[in-house]
Image (tube, rainbow, N blue to C red):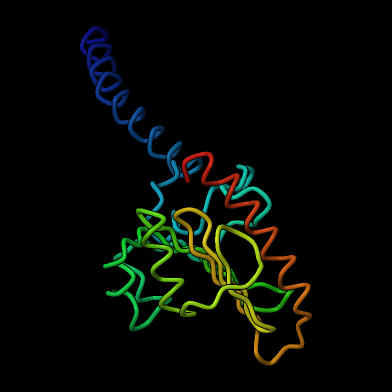
Amino acid sequence: MARGRSRSLFTALLLLLPLAAIAGWLLHGIVNPVPLPADPATRAAGPAPGKPSPWPGLPDPQADLTPERLHERVDGAEDYLRAQGCVRLLAWDLADPKGTLEILLFSSPEGAGRVLAHDVGPKRTDGPGDEASSDPQSVLFRRGRAYVRLIADPDATTDPARLIAEAGRVDRAILDGLGRGR
């Protein structure tokens, strides 16, 4: 009888061991969850904390849009921008100077130049980049295949020299970023 009872306990132990292992595995997963892969909206927010910004001198963009998502930022102009070769739009809401910054990346410098010409006509002024146009409320310029729109908030008082200085900082970030294949 003692032998039969030992065999029953041994069999029960063998059956409980895998169940205990599964329970331990589940408990470990609850206590230490594995992070899920980032969804597209999370990836659009920029690199993970602690990683350097892909645009030296600029914070991570608040919007990083593919051609399919341009409508989220440029309502009505997305078809035109895609036709000119727009492959990415990065956007920031700025506090100083108060306004918005958009960097549109094109497949070629010619596409960026056509959009600049479309927005401002033939008028060019001194400014950053390969060609630029500015007024007291905005600085628009092209650097290579990047087209930049820096537009002051119309309700805020903005020093035009401050706007030009910020555009110069953005231009340097573009030179560094595009030089690394961004």
